Image (tube, rainbow, N blue to C red; front, side):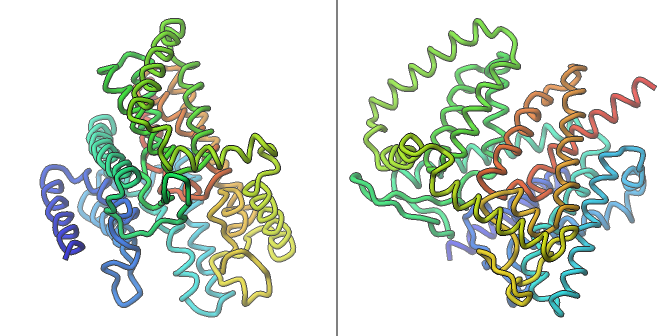
Amino acid sequence: MGKIIIFLTFIFLFIFLIRKDIVYIIPMIFLFYTNINGLLYYEDFAQKGVIKFPDYGFILSILIIIYVIYFKRSKADSIFNTNNSLLLLIYFHLFYYLFLFLYSVVLQGSFEWPVKNGRFFLYGISIITFYLLLVKDPVGKYEKVVTFLKIYTIVFSIMYIIYNYFNINFYRYEAFEIIETDKGMVNRNFAAFPYFLMYFYCLSLIDFFNRKGNSFKNVLLIFLYLICMVSVLTRGIIINAGIIFILAYLISGNRRTNIIYILFFFGLGFFVLNRIHYFETGNFLALIDRSREITDVGIGSTGNFEFRTKEFLNIFNNVVQFNPLFGFGFVNTSILGFHFNLDSAGSPDNGFTNLLGISGFIGLAIFLIIIIKWGLINIKLQRLKIDDYSKVHFLYIISIVLSFMNGSSNSFLQSFGLFLIYDLLIYRMYLKCIK
């Protein structure tokens, strides 16, 4: 019954937002892709085992593309403008995955496994939807989308904290791992972790260091996001957050004044956390216990590092032996006589490993060139000082690269495509203005 209420609420919200502005389809697509941030399960509302819940986001993206091409021709014409090298790279990237899908069907001898393993990569087509919905007014429409995403990131962050510290479970996805501590059991639920939390952490840092908006609210948001990062008990995320914090401080103005603010607010935060006995919770003890491994043996000798290094070398050697150009595609690799930790050549633990195993050296190279090209455009935007989000996106690009060492979620084009498209459109607007 609860699942039905959630779904009906979601549908009514969808209808309400669409009536106001079609651009709100963008956050709706992400709600599908993330199973409403873990509130629903992958198999909820599935259609006879063929269409899973995230697939509705993919279908919605395709429908919007078809609608715009046929009924909004003026918008659609812009996607055929191939003067921009980054846009060309994105098209090539998407067509490459379509090629990999056909390649996998030939290897597998059926559609079942290529569809099962390849669907998440094919979701990248939604980047074209983002482009079409933002192209006419990227500044105004992007602001609406970011505001909506910020609201539900805050809501999901609060829910995640309540889940971790008050044992109220909102989620259909079960915890990935349960850790026993002296203060009770601690859950590590990755599916419930707010999907865009890292982006809005970067945004809040830039707003705070540049005195944009209310500084007190920005500090509260930074602490909210940091508590969520601590709660997921992933050391890589915390290291990532620390590096991003330092970079945000370095690229900001008024660094001398900002260091005083940093010391004051972190001192205040430490005092508040101590008063509410946070340092005696199971989550904090579990994090300290996991961190102790690094101090005892060093990062290079931790169990996770050794496991991921071994996995990378195994996938690297298998790809070189089988097909270094295209990798293994989306097949069930057991039929090819190769051993992997999963049924596919992908990896959930490292973005580079994931791309290498699935798409070979060609796919990995295309992806990295897209990231580099985006970074170069972003640096130009920062120098021009024509957009408020350029510094935020710079930090987020760094965060994406750092996250590759800790997981594979950002190795899918749709995970960051919205922010890439915005920078692309803003830079294109600038080039038109100077001509």
